[in-house]
Image (cartoon, rainbow, N blue to C red; front, side, top):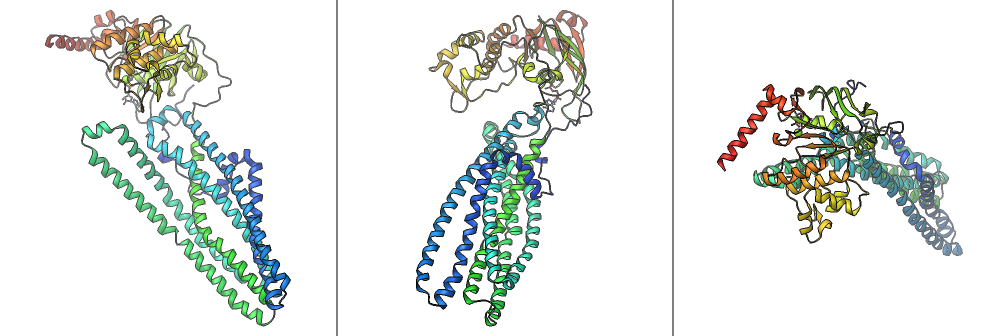
Length: 606
Ligand SMILES: Nc1ncnc2c1ncn2[C@@H]1O[C@H](COP(=O)(O)OP(=O)(O)O)[C@@H](O)[C@H]1O
Ligand SMILES: [Mg+2]
């Protein structure tokens, strides 16, 4: 099990950019898995666009008999029917239009939802390093906006495109039916459209990747302004933040104007090209009428069909830009979905960890967060089941890192981590994590009530279990003094908790989880002396009869540990009990004496 060869560079969202060689067909292939479940309705929607488009031609082709029979031959009865036919066909067209919009929106919205759901699932399966490396702004932007951009862009534009395509195809039939010579002129002009479209496609791609980065940055600024509002105020950073925001907006504005400048000439150019077509037709048409090759009715019908044909073609330019942007968004989504993560690797053949019976062993573990720096440089130790092991050492030495490797929050580079002799990477992840309860220095609480937050420890906990847990964490006095008790909302729309209350809530959550291995990472660091004593009692309850790994910032709390490991700079420099290490008069003794003299001094000054 050597992972050294693995690329350790975490995925950075801003590096995930659309492939510059986006092609419609690759986009289509990427889109197909999402479209597949709705093939039937997609085909229905597609079929419905055929009459919507084709009925344009019917209306146009009626102009010929109307002109020839009514205007030229003065046939009255026919004259009465034609307007009725035109209204009838338009009505039918309207009904088809409504149905096709409905069916296509159904398919489109479903697909948009599926893309988001799939992407969210991917987000929950990202490796921890992904969250370390990417700020929430770019996560929100990429996971929420790109699916909208991709699906709405593709679906709406494909529908418009298809309607226009069928309308154009049927109008072309009308053209050729009325005069193949004129059709030659009118359609020949369209070949000229390809060149500007190609140019625009390239321009869009060049700019869009930069726009995405800037948009993500804006999200980040909003997020930091809300999360860091205390720091912004107390460090007088309002002006700084404003400047940062303004510059980003200004940059985005310039990029947007650049897109407009570099692409929006497409519509007028298409307009001009079609004008050449109409001019050519008028010029040659006159000649054909004079030599009797085409009736005047035929000519009017031809012109009407031609103008109807050119109208969508002129606006196809904007459609085309939207489709390009959607394809680029789709490409970014596709790349995110392809990111390999070990979080969702195939768990079928993996062993379940149902209990810890023997021990946890680190065997020459090397670990780095990224290629630049090795953090753990060959860590080996053993935690016997039921014992209490304490990790101490300089800050930044790697204690937290050691703990996060046990529930496999990160993958190690080399060495082994064994639980009861089984390598953690061969264990079913969910079962592994179900055996570990962690309390951190800074604990995250979710939106919702106190009860809900506790129940995240164990979803099927009974009412009594919850009550016992808050009692064990010495939270009961506080919780029952609240008018809503356990149902008090915390977080965004509720009560704000103090650091100590948060930590005790996290401890209660860990107690409720009732896991055989407990990891406490400076779980009392946010507390003053008095509440620390209370929380320490809660922690002692949590540790009772369990295997525990404790990182303590106050050495007085770990003097009774079965084993103390001193970790400095990624090495275990000392190992033993409190008495033994103190007698050794090494790193631990230095640490202990510095703290002891500090507390001593504090006591004296009081
Ligand atoms: N998510 C991370 N990404 C990159 N480096 C990290 C990360 N977390 C910690 N480090 C680095 O790893 C080293 C050990 O950190 P840590 O295990 O938190 O130390 P301790 O808990 O002993 O204070 C530090 O130098 C820190 O800068
Ligand atoms: Mg730490």
